[in-house]
Every structure is written in structure tokens, then in C-alpha cells.
Length: 276
Image 1 (cartoon, rainbow, N blue to C red):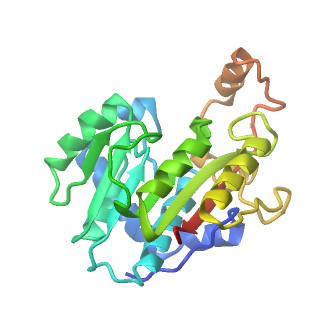
Image 2 (cartoon, rainbow, N blue to C red):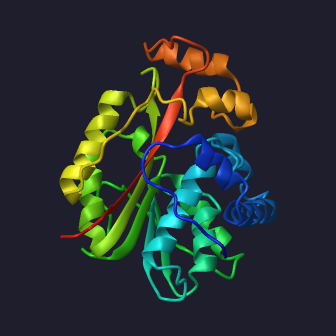
């Protein structure tokens, strides 16, 4: 498969548009559409609780290709050499199954504390040739030996927790020397949702400190930045909220009244290597 490496950091509009016209995205889309159709009835309850189509969501269209491109770069585009991969906070998506179909000699595990993935992923495994491991567990204390994984990725999870140091240290413990950690997370530019800039800075500081690889956020005001404001004009169907008035009400209940019905988010993609 033709592939290209996507840089770490804030998402760039040109890169975003390039991704959407790439061979890689076309392949991800084909696999995802087949996955959703094949497991339509099984995923019915889960789709009501989360995003019905994870790939066609504003940040995931960038985040999944980012993770894949970094794994391919790590393996030097050799998908036949066995590696071990962990999806931390996996939920239920097509992506780990896609990786299992590409890296057929490899171990792909999912870890999530929620009940539904624990029920659904084993059922999906029974219906596919390329199954993945699943562990119902807290990502702050994963039940694996030190140096278990070559690759750990964690997509849009850390904005839902404030245990950054503990989680980052756990990922470092599990990574083999030379292994890579791939993290993506939302940043609330206007500070009305998660993660506000202060916490985003703390998270990246912890990553940089733990892996001896300083990471800077960059310019959140750049015109080239992919944001929900940009997506609202680009393709509003990709936004994470279909009913902004409900999002507004939820924030009001939490005493975090948004300045607008359309909060402005971006996201960040991190790739660091365990050189210890």
C-alpha cells in the first residue's frame, strides 16, 4: 500500500486535505465501511452511546492515518515482521482490526475499562479472520509485564482523564527499548471544553520529561490550523456535536458556560520513542 508519514504536532489544513485524497485514506475508508456494515446490528447500542462512524469524524480522519503512518515508519514499511501493538482506551472501532489485517504476524491488543467493548470485541473476533486481544482494564494500571509492546497508541482518550503522569509512566513501562508511543488528544482553544491549554501543556511536559524528548504545542492561532471552526465550513457533518445547544446546556450544568454554541477545538499528535 502507498503510504506517507504524517508529522507530529498540530494538524495542518493542507496535510488534512492531502490525507483525505490519499490511497491510505481510501483503504481505511473501505475497511471501516465494511466493518460497520458487517457488524451493524452488533454495534447498534454502542453507536447510540458514541460516534456512529468513527473514521468520518473531524479529528479521527487525521488521527488514524497519523498513527498508521508512524507504525509503518517504525517498521520501515515492512508489515511482515512481527511486532506487538496496544490500543490504549480502544473503545470499539475498526482500527485495531485493520491493523491486525495489515500486520498479520503481529499481536494487536485493545485495553478499555468500559463494559461494552468487553462484550462486543470478543463477539467481533468470532466473526473475523484477524482477531485482536482485549483486556478490560484501567489504562493507569495495565496487567502486562514491562517491555511488552513495540507500539502503544492512545487516540482521543487523554482529554477524558486528568491522570496524565500515571498514564504516561505506565505506557513507558510497557514499551520496549526503541518502541514508540503515539498519542492524540483534543485541545480547547477557547478553554470551554477539554483539554484547556494549561492541561495540554502539562500533558506534553510530562511526555517530554518521561521520554527525554521536549514537545511544544505551537501556535494555536495559526491560519493553517485544523479546528472545529474550520471543519464547520469544510464539512459540518464531521463535527463532534450534532446539536450544539445540547452541548451548551451540558457545559452550563457543569458551571462551564461556553462563550459560543460552537466551541473551538483543535488536536495534537505526539510521537516519541523509548530510548531508555
